[in-house]
Length: 182
Image 1 (cartoon, rainbow, N blue to C red):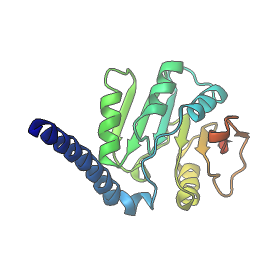
Image 2: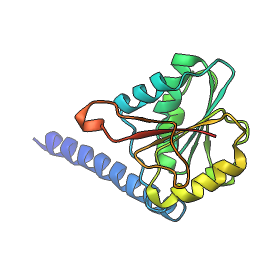
Image 3: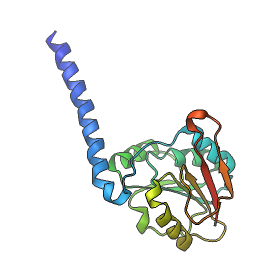
Image 4: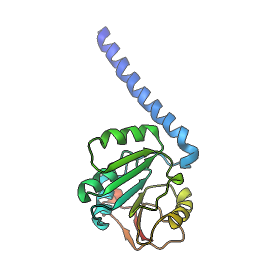
């Protein structure tokens, strides 16, 4: 009986510790993320994006706020492109690094994308909060080369007209996905 209680306490402590780590990792980066939390993009939404934006081997996809790297992995598998992800949340970064082990052409940086040079990107993927979209638009306009494609989940980039607006069709994941051509 004592071992059962001990096991339950250990499991509860591990879960509490993981939750505390999540909260701390989120709180530390709040000034930079302006409230955006690490939330994984659904597979339905990633599939809609990957189907709508074909890429060629040798191109570079950049995911600004890559979370666990699932967009990078899906695009890498499908198109064999180089994929670069930026993530500030330490827990999400570590998860992405682990999940992307052995994935060729995928690089994940624990770094703020606002200070990165995105000029080599052929495609930029983002799932950010509306508070940062105007600033993101200005950064992309100054950094990206002509012909680059930007994909934004849920929130439009103010001042830019989307070439396409995707809706995955699943009622749970039917929020818009904006596709821009710069």
